[in-house]
Each structure stands twice: as structure tokens, then as C-alpha cells.
Image (tube, rainbow, N blue to C red):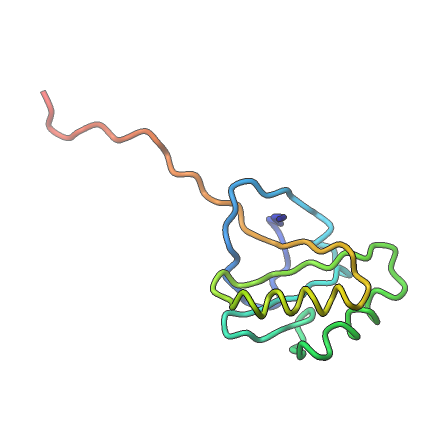
Length: 120
């Protein structure tokens, strides 16, 4: 899993939160290949909606002249797991070996408690 603090959000999704994610700044680049999956199972390549049937070919075309062949996934935390896996499979059948799952850094809760009010 990866986190990207300044990712350009082209499609609105509520990312899952992760406590031990690894930052990957390449996902922020203008020419990075990002697949987004919304909670209602819509699939986007960049900001353009696509189908699972077309996703692999479109990704292959986008990566044709690139040296980095990584595809980043931004799946809504409430997206159907099956749709996310189908999208990853479509990308992998297009020849992509490396994918990154983008998440948000989990906010840690403070373990200290505020002092009790009015205590003696």
C-alpha cells in the first residue's frame, strides 16, 4: 500500500486508511497512470470513465512509451472488493507487473486523556 499526501484527486473517492503505508511520490506526477474505483463500482482511468472490458487495453496504450510501468489504484473504501480485484486483473493481463494501492495515512488518536474537571 502507498500513501500520497498531495495526490491530484481527479475522481472523488474516500480512500481507505492505513497505519503503515509507504509514501510514493511518483503517483503525484502529471503523467502517472491512475485507476479510480468509486463506491458505486464505476471505473475511471485518470478522469475518464471506462469499463473493465476496455481498461486493460487503455492502460497498455498509456504505458506504451513510458519507462515506469506502474499503475496506481485509488479505490473508495466502500467500493466492492470484486470490482477492485477485477480492475487489477484487467491491468495485469495488459502486462502491468507493478501496482500501487493508494491510501490515506491513518490519523493516530492521542492516548493521553484530558484531566478530569473539578477534581480535588
